[in-house]
Image 1 (cartoon, rainbow, N blue to C red):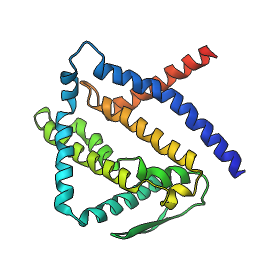
Image 2 (cartoon, helix red, strand yellow; image 1 turned 60 degrees about the vertical axis):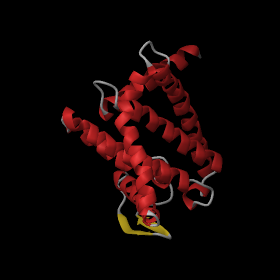
Image 3 (cartoon, rainbow, N blue to C red; image 1 turned 45 degrees about the horizontal axis):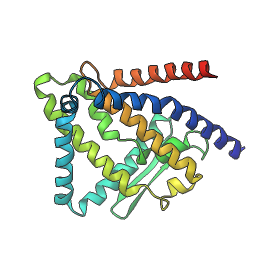
Length: 224
């Protein structure tokens, strides 16, 4: 039964990848191949880039404390996704040398998103993106710096924490686990890129992604 479940999950990953990759390529075309100058397009992310550079500076200043922040973020992401999946959280522990979250439920349904979320879900960035539409236009640049700061923080965490040494990852077939993680990162990239387009926000960005999936699904169906 467990092998059948992973065959189904793997098939879903392949389908979602086939729906997402063409959309990501379209976004790259909009940013780099359209008639609009590239620098003008990339200026949408200029303050985000400033925040990302600020994060690299802050990492040096924080020193060893940054390791605790990484662990705290890791365990907090487990916790947030567990709550979203209606699991009870029994305990939460984060220390510089490691952490642990204990939740209700079995190792089956819902376990994969909860286990692998810390390697692909930038929760602080999404929290700020949810609030961003409420910020006035004159202060949006400050908010974008904060978004860039959190995004760089998560990227550092993803880079440092993703590996076969993680029990969250090696409890699954590695090809499946890494496929899930990198596909989720690609989906996040699609959402984050569009969230800064003029007239868009994180909500309309997600809707645009869903519409692209639907269109690509119809295209695949027509091709078959």
